[in-house]
Length: 602
Image (cartoon, rainbow, N blue to C red; front, top):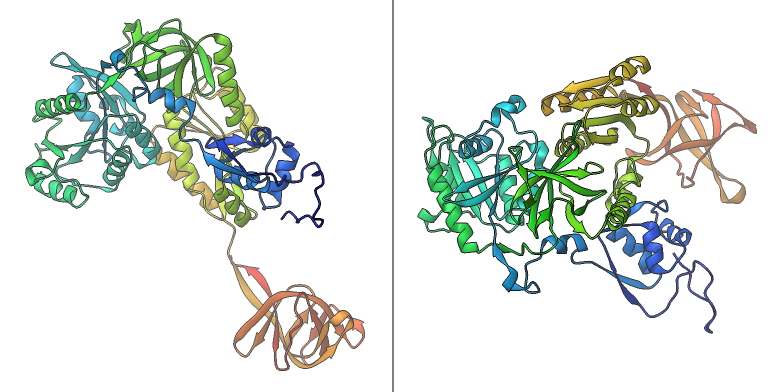
């Protein structure tokens, strides 16, 4: 706490002392570094760190903190804060509102996200629509990363986002719902609504997008569409035939039943929504997926939401920047540009961006480099690129000494990286935790192996192999590399490893008991318990507890154990001794002092 000034008269504040000037409001982003906050507050970073330390928050100068932590520091300087309603990036992709010249707006294709429970037929449904085979390429028939595709319906293009249904990919699915116009909820007619179906409904509702339900697998004997409709009504999704406004279409991804009706409903709904964007401005959009191609370099699937992205333009996406060298569609065909509502694969970035990063066009290479560098400085301040929040401060304090399983993670695409990292972190508990010190897309490299060797970690390779020489380096350095194609297997192995690191159990063994017979005054207000050892022995080293009748009064350590005037290490049964306990002085005659130790259970 900052002490109040003792004198009433004005004086000049010392350096680092909070200024009690008229409060002012400071608009802060969701996250920023301590150094950036210090600049905004016109204070030394060291002084800002001191203010946070006074509140029990330990940070470094380049630590990324969230708005709540920044508010704590700002309040000490009499500065009020408020969260910026939207950042420059998000305002760029949300263009098209009242401030946009409506005369420049043109119709754009709807962006439709396929959501639902695992194995309910989301990808099979899109597969039938596209008349291609996507499912066969996925390990175990489960979609492992997001995909963006465009199909034509009566000459009208429709953009689909196929998102994973596995629970581990909740974050990607949530991101898909945020960039979509319409959510298609796929529910198996023979299975009904499942936990991940509920998650999908919540994501779509949070994104405030209309939901169209595709009741799939109608060709199966156990199909019960009415049961699905009843389950939907229980979740405030009342279908049209029951008097609601939710479109529900029975379909079969195997036979094609109802697919035309589904597409027609989507087309009509998108026309009613009057989706428009301005194609004649600098492009802005979202990175749907990103990967590192050995031949072409970093590639990114981009969904442009406003403007037109052309070959040759300078772009920035998160910490990556570059110039668009080529654009292809999902079939690998060359494109000259990407218009609003259309996906495309962009080649030309200097690094692999994160799935969900905002991509925007800038005027030149210098601006692109500077913008990406600023983003990189914020995201490179920790091993996990984590942001310090007030919640994490509490967790750090409560955690104490925690054992760690150090991991290096490599996966085929950035979306898989993100999903696996989040799933692995959820396996941690209070005793042991998994810490991913590095993650990225692409094959396992020499540098990955070196990092794992230096950190005593193992490498998890998800759907990727080795770069040339990396496998030999791993063998030479003794680094374990585990390769997986199914996320379940990976998570099971990590969980088993964490269980193997758990501390052994201990049980309490009572060493001896002594009864307080008399209480003597000592120096400096201390009280000495004159005791007689009832059984066992009382030891100077080890834990003790004071029992009063059947209640535990205190658990503490022995500070002094004396026999007459001599300091002793133990007192045996039948002998008398004087006891002084650490931080306890309220003895009463008849109290029982129990000496005990903890023994490991085999």
